[in-house]
Image (cartoon, rainbow, N blue to C red; front, side, top):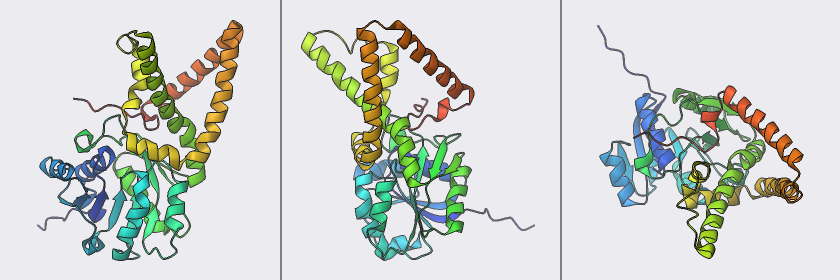
Length: 310
């Protein structure tokens, strides 16, 4: 009896950036037998050693060379500010058959970077898995990260339909639900559901620290669980979030403006002891929150993620 050969979606995959998302993708590709061989790129020796020691990837590289022409798929998992350099580094070594995708949380800016050169030969299909934790680095990765989460794919002009379907199949094989939308719609959605909450979390922790310093009180020590839960995401990677917020500047500034107007309305209601306005708002938002939970979306909240269980 002839033993059947295992069928992989990809023979060889290169992951550029082996942090939380990159290492989780690698582990999921292995766990679900999606890729035969996984290569991880990192400029940091410590990261490469961890990735090899923990068997996150099959091999590591510290520079882009013509060897990447062997790859069926390249996944960019590095900060958004690195994309333009990466596009320029990989382009000379790739052919039209190579699929390149990413995990970035802002899309319009990335697409502009990609189209800045008309000579790109590879097929770049932007994608964004809406998953994560406040942890970072290769030690934070786990293969279940994408199960029952959304992954948004934002195709651009020139993408081959079969390649879009291949990327879609990959994310579904890792347990994700997949949505297709334009880069613009993606950025508008993420601005309110992910980017603004992160910005607020970073800012409120900074404000609390300033108050503690000025008043000499133990604001941080005695912070309630609600404060700790909300500000957990303020521990997220600062380089990544700096790049995200700047890359989605237009959509985020629009949302900040709207949020500021609504906050001013609440400030006025508190000043004038307008309890009716506060009650109506809290009742309305409570119902919306309950609908989110009933719809089973709570575990998929964009970029808030769940901490890895020890």
